[in-house]
Length: 106
Image 1 (cartoon, one colour):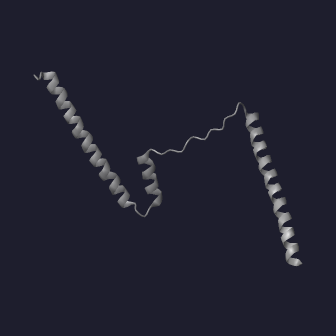
Image 2 (cartoon, rainbow, N blue to C red):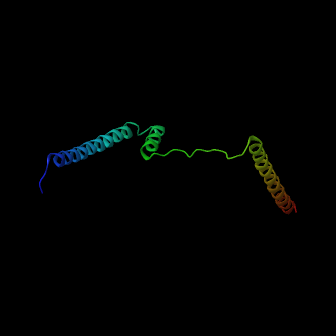
């Protein structure tokens, strides 16, 4: 296969790109290894580093609503149901506790 100047330049470019990529990878690895070593007792810094390395980001939490009134109503409904469920569970538990207390007293 005959190489012309353009082909030779392209092959040289590809080789150089591979070298640069390999050097970046090696240096990145050294940097993060050193960072982890230096912060082995700093859990916060370690987790921040992991998050950065793994590109973890918390999912944005957006409340979906058509308008402010719908949002307020959904909050009211949620907490109203939550309180009703808690009251129901407390009533059930207090009935069982009363039975338990009566059995112990007898």
